[in-house]
Structure formats: structure tokens, C-alpha cells
Image (cartoon, rainbow, N blue to C red; front, side, top):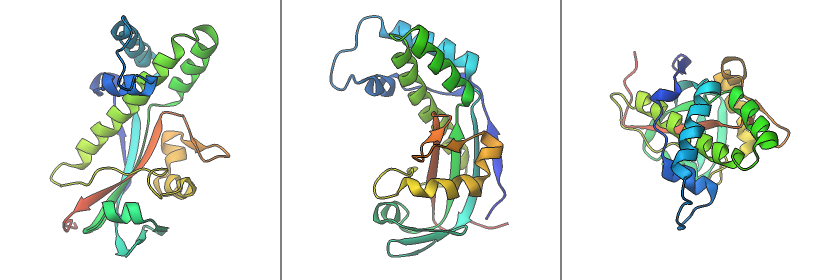
Length: 203
């Protein structure tokens, strides 16, 4: 394992894909309402008042035997993740969040501005993906990476989340906790595996 690294950022650094935000709003294949750009502009300004983007990551040696994967003490059986990581001898494990301030503002908007709250929610969902893209870019410096893969996708169960957060010390470093149903709080948080192609040189 490489040392655990903590990253912080600002909302102005994050590129938010507004098409993704529209998709989160349910505009699949439909024309967006007039004025949605103005609402997204407002959501962007609101996000600046409450977000505190943070992430942490660590690198682990990876061993694979068919669909059985092992790294950093975590053992996982997953055909979809094994396919994603095929040929990789190491990976990054990371967690990222926009922070608890986003949850607090969203809860307030749901009570005071129920029409705007879904727009802000969708924009923040796209924003955390943008933050993850930024983190990915830092991980990729000098490396070729596989697409990130998160618990809950394919056949990777959410039941691995407690161990992931423990391995990354994400509760203490990022403030991420889990609900009884294994969803993360703050809600705009992501954990992911990122395979490193080829043989990663060791210090």
C-alpha cells in the first residue's frame, strides 16, 4: 500500500457537466425547460456557499484469481470488477465528497423551495462526478488508468463500503459515514476502484 493522500479543492475548479445534471433531473431525450440554465447558474452559486470538496486515496497491490480479487486486506468476488481490472497489478482506492454543507442546504431547500431543490440536487450530483473526474486526473499523472468503478455497479455489492471507508480512514478524514442501508452521508459522496494499467514502479 502507498501512503494515504488527502486532497481538497474548490467549486471553481470543478467542471460540471450540465447535460449530466439534466439527466439526473430526468430529461432523457426531452427538451429542457426554458430557463434551466439560469437555474443551474443559481445552483452553482449556491454550491459555492456550502461545498467543501475533499478526497482521499491510497494505492494497493492487486492479486486476481479469476473473479476473486484481493488488495489491502479486502477480498472481493466480482466478475464485472475483475473484467474492469484485467491485466492490472495495482489499483487506487478512493473516496470523494462535496461535504455535509451540501446536505444541509438541500434539506433546507426541500422545505423552503421545493421547486428548486431537485435542480440543486441534480446539479450537485453532476458536481460530485466532476470532482471525481478532477481527482482521477491527479491519479492519472504519468499513468494509464482504467475507468473508475464504484460499489453498487455491476455485481459489486454495497456491503464492501464499510471496509472501504475503514481502509481510507474516510470517516475521520472526509466525514463520510454510512446509513443502515449502506448509503453514504454526506449524500454527494463517491467511493471507487481505479485500476492502474501495466506494472506500477515502486519507490
